[in-house]
Image (cartoon, rainbow, N blue to C red):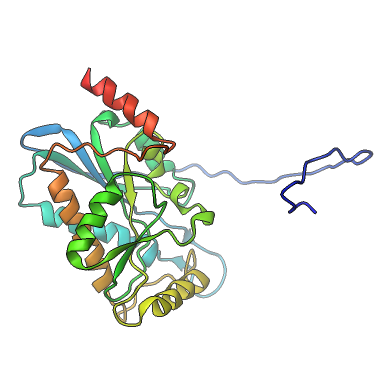
Length: 281
């Protein structure tokens, strides 16, 4: 009955509810880690690469007590480290920020703190790229974009992928709200265009069927589980593809005058427009 689209809430008369909620609160300090490369021509304009370095810590159950977080999110951290290496000896017009955030698993606390107390003016952030849990696969024909249909960064990605003979695969699970559950949302809420591009799922060897099996196996057996461990059997070619694609996009973006925006009708576009107006004035 409650699932009927015409259902409306109503008062239950003569009923009372008594409930008790018990919770433990622990206080501790953690840190965001930031790498910075200063631009040569427009040093006050920034591109952000981000990934969260935290995971769930330890469990009291079972023999294996460590939540390693190898996919979620050592893959993302490895991605931004690799991007930092690629940019190390290259001068860029705009400045680059490599941000490893903490406490994503506890409610995006690290990214929210950074975005709430930014060491830079967020109106001067050109774009951001978030990496969060790229399942290790072989090479793919596609790139999955979480929250597909959001910003003009997708146009840049589509253009790049077409050069590679690949394509954008729209978020296959939009109902799960992954776009609102990762660190980039802390910046999106403040108007910064963010691209959350995952790995691909249409495998060169095995196609979509093989990709679906890999994803389902990870979600069922390893996601937020002690089984999320590194294995020498991992094929990292798909991760390398993803990083190389973002590198090519961001290299161009770091040396031109583009200011990507959210698409018309997107909930964050008005905030972006206002921040650009303030910046220009």
